[in-house]
Image (cartoon, rainbow, N blue to C red):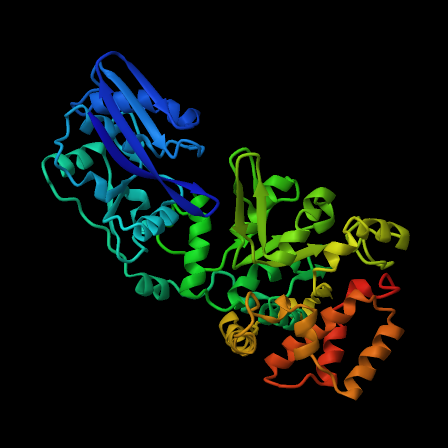
Length: 513
């Protein structure tokens, strides 16, 4: 008897429907074909034990299982439930007249028949809705995540017995319902890390506000204990709240990586990723034998923080150059190619020298200008070229640290940032793939960053006197456009240009003092 059951495979952040065909015939044997990996090949042991412990069995017949399309590589243990139900229907242990073909069924089986969570529930649910399936049956741990998709019946189950009873005895399953908008806005609460906790550093806070308003990449340079990490951790709290579409896109990536199990449901906060400097290039950009999203994709629509930037391997930093420019990363293998989105804000921090301190005779450890230059040269010019803002962070004096007065809260700063982003959204409404100032190309810079004669002369003088590099020119114009947006100014003025010039520390000749 031939039976068809439907599952799904995830490639990149998109799902593909897999048809599991189960045929029973005279003879003995268990044959699983259709390019399964080892985890799927081992499923017959899990299925046999789970069925036996729930009063069912794999009969002594010739069973052939095909996972179509057969030329696509399938991986993972999420097909256990799909294969088990196909065997039960094909061997007559579940009645023939059942609505099995109306559902996508996925889940990993434990030996007692309970179900373990799977990866990629959200993209699978989106694909199931697109292809007209009535519902999606999956482990209850993933049900809330899949139920985000409107118009698809989602049933979270705890054991295989519940699924068998649903198809065999027509005992209804409890549908998981999620009001996505209500859940999304309910969780827009006060941030865990708030800028009001930061003492002093008013100029750096201003710089972070500008970076958030324009989506600019930023590098913080300063000695240990000056507050670089503290400031970076608070950056997501002043970014505009995720839109529903951004939240769905972000949740999709984390679902594929299997990182939504604990939280469930839709992601409401912008991601903040802070990998250790020993990370490999594959872990950063994604990949592996069976490609998975890397840190830059997990930071999509959020912040990627690289602490102690010169300590990262040169090869790791260099692989970020293309994703920073294109805002996605393509991973190619012999059999297939996947693309992961990676539109993130890069925030990097570093000490100005190996000892950690500026060329200061009162500092505990000093370094010569040559040592500082050698340390800084670990970061390539092309990578720095993609960082719009360089800012020096100085230690906070005792008077500021001991103050009781709290600084400006993240909520107030975020209001100004959101208003500036709205101006940019309207400006770039008719331009595809450009939403904020940091994404502008040369054409848009020439159109939207026009300077009057006085401002142009100021920029020319600054570049000559400070020996700013040619790459600083466009970056200064982009940042000055963002400063003008924060001031709600249609035109870029001399004040905006002069402030933007301050944020190119590493381009200045004689920066080491």
